[in-house]
Amino acid sequence: MKVVALQGSPNDDGLTASLAEAALDGAAQAGAEVELVGLTDHEIAHCGQCADGWGKCREEGLCVIDDGFADVRAKVLEADAWVLVTPVYFGELSECVKAFTDRLRRCNIGAKGEGLVEKPVIGVAAAGGSGGGIATCLVAIDRLFSHTNAEIADLITVTRRSADYKREAVRAAARAMVEGIGE
Image (cartoon, rainbow, N blue to C red):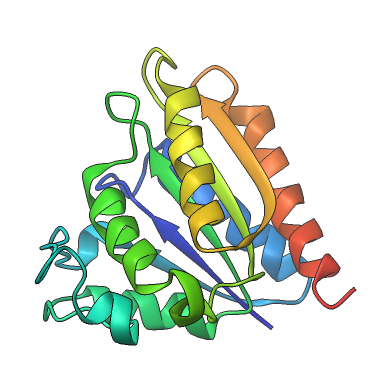
C-alpha cells in the first residue's frame, strides 16, 4: 500500500508542508509506504490547450508538454491513495498546484482517467494568512476530485489559528483513509 502527498508551497517549513507531513505520518501509522512530492521542486508548465483545446490528453490521456508533469502524475497513478495539500493564494490553489491539476484533470477525464477513478484522496486547503478564500479553494479541490471521479476520503480546511488541532485531523483522516482501503 502506497500513499503519495503532493505539497504545493515553496516553503518547506511552513503550514502547508507540516500538513503534508501530518498526512504522511497518519498513513504510515496505518502501515502505508509514503512519499512526499513538493510540486515546486518540479518544472510544470500550465496547460497549452493543444489543437482545438483537446489534444492527446483527450484522445490518449497523455500530455505532450515535456516537463515534470508526467513524473508527478505517474507517482499519483501508481499510488493506492493520495493527498493534495495546497496553500490558499487569492482564494485559489497555489500556482504550481493549479498548473499540475489542470493538466491532471485533462489527462484523466472519462475513459482515460481509470488510474484515478475511485482512488481515495484527501484534499487540504491551508490558509496561513487571514483565512479568507479558504472555502473557494476547497471548492476548486472538490471540483478536481469530482472531474477525475476520485473517492473523496476527506476535504479539510486549515487556517493558522486552527493549525494545531487541524494538523491532528489531517493525520487522523489519512490514517482512516488507509485503514479503509479495500473495505
